[in-house]
Length: 474
Image 1 (cartoon, rainbow, N blue to C red):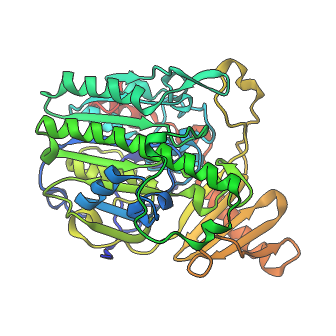
Image 2: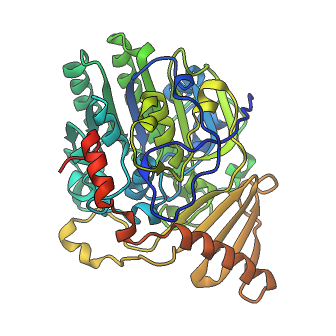
């Protein structure tokens, strides 16, 4: 495995709140970032997709031949982590390069504040003349709730299938069809930004018989034999959903090849979060911060710029997506505006283009209380809002991981190099002398990133500058 080593560099997307420290690192000249200007961009997000269930990430079954081939043709981030295991907030963090407590969308069904100071990927690409289309597959991403539709030329959200009573989702075949039609209609445009969101690995796990018995490519993890029959059956259904979604991703990539767009298209594939399948006694995501829910795949391909078969072994955050993608697609963006701009995430463009890996850093993730589900906005009063301390806060540094549950006054400490399945935590409680020291440090980190809504809004001057440059419209 190739390990890439690099010095981190801040990039440019969102206007920084007054008093927030600058991201530490060194600048890479825009002229050295990419081999070509303004490639097409295809962003594929696969909901609820665990990294450890893809064969390119070491899984014993070939669940994902299309995604594996994409990794062979590009670069794979081996240890990518979401800052929050929930669909809506995670996508906002990917699109803004900011933590949920910074951008303000902490649970599903919540958008960025009006006049948010955090620019999103589609806002920036629109400024550079990209024709954009989005095709989403589940309720947490519909435009009425997220307001993301305002930044796209076309926003397709026809949710045809029921989940938890309501029509709140659609399958891969339902979203691929209109996405291909949009490509057909816009293939002659100079610059395209296509975002396709697949929901299929999410609960309910349908057994896709065509994909239920994938080829075994290596010996299975011995831990699998310890799972109950119920868990193993659930895993089989989940894996078949991955294979089903993977086959439709192949259709999307085939169409790009058919139109001769492959060599000038940046393809990015990643997930918003993983999924607990019963290994720790829970199924789902949202509150827990085990590896199964926060470690996700992240793959990128851009022929001529990204060396095939590259692997970044160091830990990164999916908040790094926005600065990395924009540095590849529109490297001149950061030199254009007078407004002071930075990310909480870091651009990985040097790792992607120069095979120099990121410097080690702390990776943070959070979960918030609040009802998660697929219910209409008119009964969202039933949610428990949370603008205070997260339900859990996690920190990863190297192989050492700590998860704080404030309400229970408990820290769970893991050495992932010795305990990759997180079965043997060292636990600190409020009675331990170390507990106060550790909890105070976590509290201080959260307090520095926990912005009030007023702090995440544009100043009048910032708004005028960004509006004059075409990044925002009234």
